[in-house]
Image: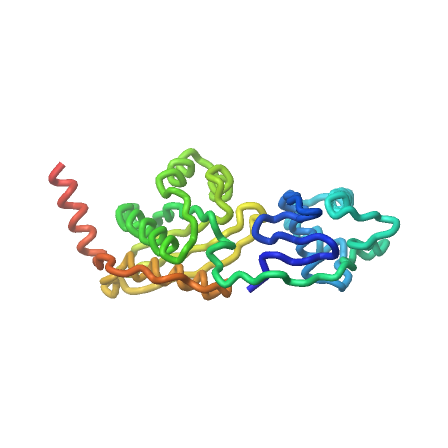
Length: 271
């Protein structure tokens, strides 16, 4: 589990808010600048090549070295550093950069809910034959939100996130528009008596995938579909990221996939 605050020289790196605290003032960093600084700090005091930094911050996007030079310049201004007499970031010509200030963790987070909050849970995409399992997806989304909130995470309104998603934005764009730090999305497919759920958690600012998992089971085995899957998803997320869950949800109605379909069919006929 990473520290939420790290002392870097005379400044602090605020992991939770993606910024640098200098003289008591928080300076938020652009996503790529933050990615560059994190890679340098995490690798300190070792050299990080130009190529490695560009791959971390720009991923597959093709840019020139000047983009990295400008990012380093912005970081130096935030840190109060000087390229000629560096105390934070040292340039090694034709090789890369080195973070030379001391790095010390200040505070550990015992609950990963702070690191992923606010989180937007998006309705899972339905890849079932005929796409008739919307009621299963709706129930699963509600259960996941409930389990996350029981664990102490801040969760964006499900209706709000779904409304923005229907406007045609990508998952990460939805997260940005609703003020989320992370986005939990996934897909569901029911076919030939089997149910498959895939899900992933992504950081909105860095666009980095933090966690993913897949659940594959017989349809006849799902007597606690929503509760079981929601608990497995949230537990897997926290376990993988090294966090600690809060109290687990309790007293939740247990339903089977078949009974859900029967109930929906009865409601449809009644209307």
